[in-house]
Length: 71
Image 1 (cartoon, helix red, strand yellow):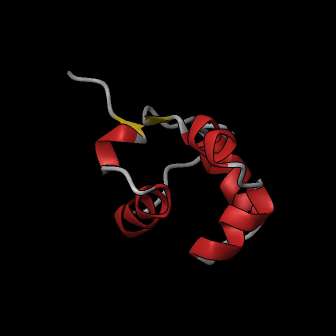
Image 2 (cartoon, rainbow, N blue to C red):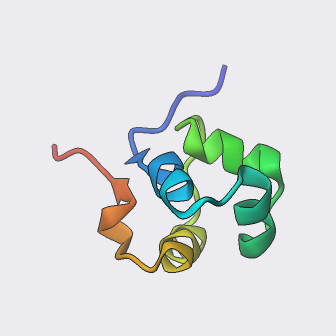
């Protein structure tokens, strides 16, 4: 069984605010919709590069999309 990530995100909120579908965002960042769905659902952590690409698509800082809880 895959252990869920501790990284949280607000991808869905940003997508909906900008009127972008999962399929469209996935196409823009070069992943499948299923991959984006797993990241958005916090079942999978994106690579650092992919996380930056996602934030850049929304025109915000990485910290505005992703959060990692403190120790």
